[in-house]
Image (cartoon, rainbow, N blue to C red):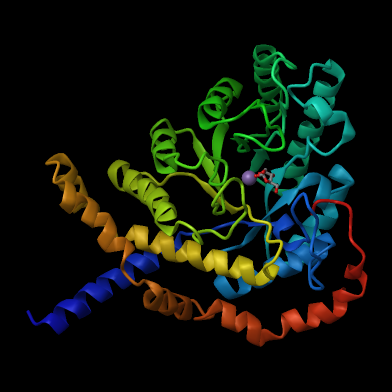
Length: 405
Ligand code: PSV
Ligand code: MN
């Protein structure tokens, strides 16, 4: 066979694999990623940032329009549904208007002054009850919006040694999570997220995947662990955590972002694209081995304080598609054989070959075959949307808003 024919055959097989992978790939957008957010040192305001929930839906719809892989938007209850369940009909109407689905529902048990010493881990039973009630009403919001996943992140912890009873707080978490799990409607899931530090700087009640796993296991059958890629120490092997949780059927989903130092909210793959590839690879290899598709919610959790928000989301979704498509190109059969015979260099090269493949032409073809933009970022820029919202929103966006997102 000539080199040219070989290359052509390889390319068309790759194109099929990429196209099949992308047909099944979806990644959720965070409503808070379209709003002005900043660091603890302040916010740089953007004239086009979304403030209202309608603006967030409208901007998210742009990302989906050009990429085709972001049909849902994660909502934060306090920022997006300030009236609780009473806000649900309006949100449902916006979802319909903008052709999106309401995605995971994120209760907020960290901003209210009551939560100074924690929520489900607070020594005061009345505050623990308040947190459970808020989570309960978030479950009801999810039901009203037709959202499946309740996504739980707790800022609970302490700043100084000896100031909290860590064991009692663990038990309060166990009790609280069991209680809210019992409120889930049929088909709903509860995802438990972990984070090593921030805002607590001495101990965090759910600091790592082991703690999240134990709490999810004790909460009930529909609880799973959520892996936020930014919530790990520097050298941690995230794909190993992913592999373990997959094997235990306890992985529920991801919050994707990249980091250099801590929970930096950098763009997915901007620092270590190979790590994202390795995470996707563990998922796809497990699927190949078991013949079962893992039921995972992929969500972006990034708040860009400097980049233009819609552009940053398009860039992220595009990067996610590329890294997922690369991971889909791993030759699993070959890899399994090489792993079995401990052919180290050849096994590793199965990953490296796939990672170094340029999947962009195949993604462009896939996009065109779906009537989508071959170059989503360029299409967005050509659309004039950004110029229009900049004019419409800039006057009112000059004064800072106090809420995080
Ligand atoms: C906390 O750092 C976190 O990752 C949680 O998922 C929150 O919901 C989100 O960030 C808010 O930005
Ligand atoms: Mn997160």
